[in-house]
Image 1 (cartoon, rainbow, N blue to C red):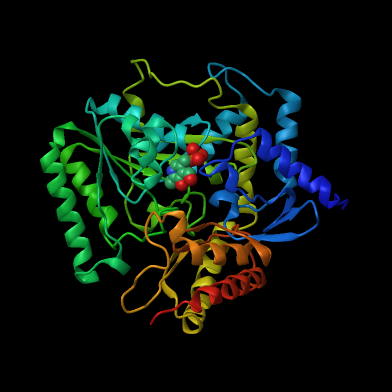
Image 2: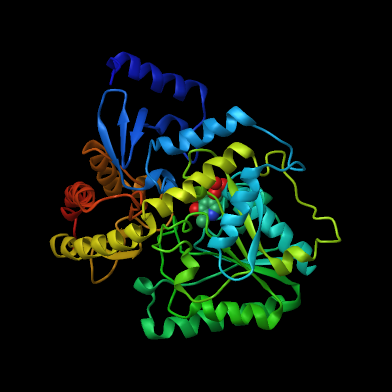
Length: 448
Ligand SMILES: Cc1ncc(COP(=O)(O)O)c(C=O)c1O
């Protein structure tokens, strides 16, 4: 494969930095990898350097990079028709709707196709309010639901804070502590979390609450695991008050946790599922809001006031249908479960070697290490919502990870481990060796 000279690579980076804006970044502080191509779990830059992708892009490229089966499906669709209005139908749209109904449990049989995670969430919020005639939406503080104004207002994550002066109204956040930092004994966490939520519902007035919105499995906030029984009890609370339950499976869906959807570990069925990311694995932007028959039937004889120019885009539908086939043909969901267990066992070994590993939270291949300065005090290596000057050690860890040829998501004191679901044991070993070397830098500052 042809590689560019250093100055050509620098020119690519220069033009990107000069003429485009970077998300969630100080524009002068970016240091991007110039990616030329991807193959499986690897990305390659223009100088031929290989990076193992341990966060599957933004936890979306579940099938791995460069899969030409998607290219073929997309080209075939484009040769027939690239765009029809959402009032027309295509074979691929019907096939995809039918396949999603087959995958989703219960009576979640109707797909409203969107463009991304945020647009799935926006439509979920809108539909929950329309359907119930209520206005409040309850979500968790440590959650992320997207960057559009409704979705960012729904998010509890501090990415909301810079824009919260203009936030959309009627989003109420509640706390759900996580086991590692819960001071009153893990055995009390479920009871405490549920009674806190019940009090909050009473204070807010259950008849004003349209929906509770929760991630199927916590993602970028820190991969927190729900206490056993939590989601099932929330489902019961929703039933008791006529509140809808929306699961955000944008990150946790499509095999990421070792099942089609994260909530399927918890023996309950929501009223709506917001999807994106793993639906097309980033080969094209796409999303879907899956809705129960009960909710959809309200709009049999009443206008459904939702719409997007690119809803059910035929080319994205073709990419999604082929992606779903790949999950099944390549047994990727089974592999995610097996490789997740392998990662768990390897992290147990790393914990013995690295005193700064405070916690490891994982389900399937959606996992995160939390580094601490001291295991007894649990003081984090970088605090929650760390300022740049509080990131000195973690920035060095992140820089080492990159230098050694890995791309992954490092946030505050967290290092995410979420490789594509096609990852092998050998590739996990290769990636964990890089992470281990990087953590050694943090170990030098250990204060235990
Ligand atoms: C759980 C969850 N919901 C929604 C979103 C928003 O998706 P998008 O960036 O495609 O709008 C994300 C993105 O990371 C996410 O992790």
